[in-house]
Amino acid sequence: MPVARLSDLDERGRAVVDVGGTPVALVRVAGELFALQDTCPHRGGPLSQGDVEGYLLHCPLHAWPFDVRSGVCPSNAGARIRIYAVRVVGEEIQVAPISGSVSAP
Ligand code: FES
Image (cartoon, rainbow, N blue to C red; front, side, top):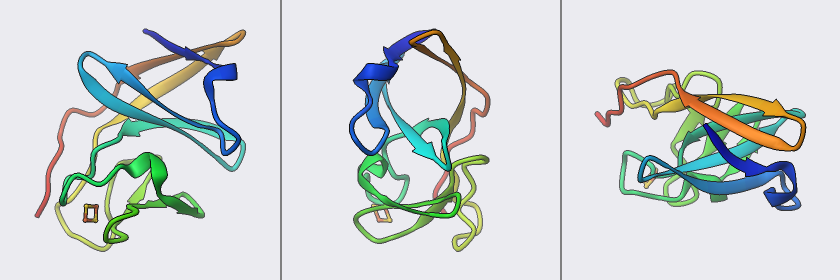
């Protein structure tokens, strides 16, 4: 589904959009656009405001890292976030769910 346009991304290549009532973070990493749930499964931190290290996005509240490609949190077994497939058509950003499990240990 279309959720935003490339011009909606901020200077860091990020935006938060609504997908079926869920806030979803668009995050550009290494020149590629990823989409993932914006709410951290630990205590609800806004992942869209986290720092990136490689493909790991660190939650701004307690620094749990999440791999933007898989949603897996490598430092907390069992913790993962929902990720979405991203497609850019012209200026339009489209997303679709590709994983349904969201969990915290
Ligand atoms: S709220 Fe994200 S690590 Fe605690």
